[in-house]
Image (cartoon, rainbow over all chains, first blue to last red; front, side):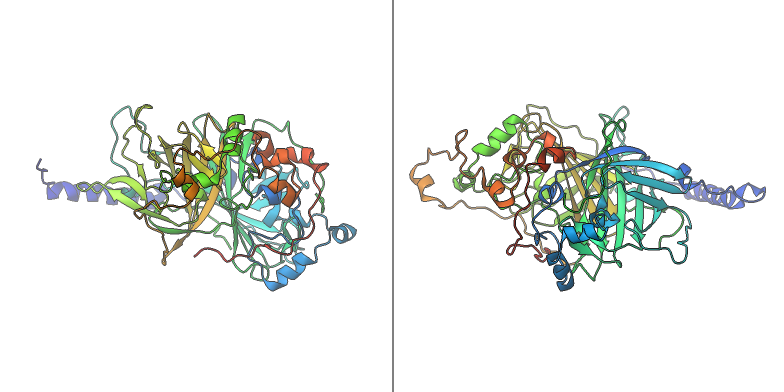
Length: 273
Length: 284
């Protein structure tokens, strides 16, 4: 089948229309300032709020029970970190009031438990855990960490929405489907990127595998709504800490949404269990 | 430091992605380690009847693993784009095969899945859609096979849903395996891959069966298995880690946090480990 040539005049006309649209957009309506961008809460491409439960199908032996001292399979530790792990003493941590060491942000999402996610205000997402009764605050926008902010188990988390593209690039767009078929590109997507620093030194695993105060935690929170109504959350997690880890620690714990907080079960930090 | 405003995610999946997360997806030393697998009663019975030596049977040496092996296996993902030769529009994404895993072609052109009576293959049949910037793919029509560590199985009625999320040079693949025969709940695993310019793949090669176990060749009618209650390694993981047998044998209850309450009074921390402590270098 031969393809009819596209008249040059038609191409020129389309380009003129496209240019006109761009100019109009730059004028901002011509009546003063453009409207301010929506606050992060209103701009959220995904709704993370609600109750979520850990699904422990990975690393069960290291998450559901406290493994043996010296079992640091899965980590690439520096000699300095090996020394710390080998010196792990839960009684000593308890005596020092540091029984929350394994509940710091770099390890917290791998601790079996539930999350309760709410908006504290338009710019701050609050993540509470029942295991260890911890609270993480994700600050959006141009949040500035106040000077002399003390290091904490949860550190300071700066958050940013990763917005879905308005238009899939043509090369990745499948051919149009027949009327009545499911579309090849459905709306949705978007994720949350969070970078956490200013941490108090803690443990990546309950048995004393350490991270230092210089650790940087980078997370991507991705939501998946299934056709059957279930909602799943995958948190791609990278811990970079050259003082303790020879290579960044990468894991992606999974959560499933629950209808309410009926199973919410706050329990204090424990250095032994 | 993060820029204050939102940014767009990436959608190009082409390239070679090296397995980079440090989870126990493919690792276990004990034959009866079913920890964290939401097996049904039939799934547990199937797992306990399995003798890994059966892979040495002539007819099984060259069989491939089911698609879930993309997440639990040891090799990189080599992903390429398949385009319509005339329009250059996207037909699908191809994940190259390995020595023991079939090619996965994720058809994006809207073709339907075959009839439920259609033949099943080791790779199955996969279609995909974009949901925003995330590729969602669904695989059906794959044969029964080993889903983790030569210990548990999916049946030929299973369905695998993949989610591909790219974040810079990292690709997170979430696999949701559902099986009305051997699983009581979806079995969800994740794996993180890092884009590499120095791939070290293990390509599909012709497999030639050889004589591995003389007793199998001397008696071709022998079907290696363990009868109910006769699995000789059933207590191995409990002996090594002090984890109660009921947990070692998996099940849906064991994957939720509240199961820890049942373990608390039964578990005693093992003595310190002096060998096999980990710190293996990552695969490159």
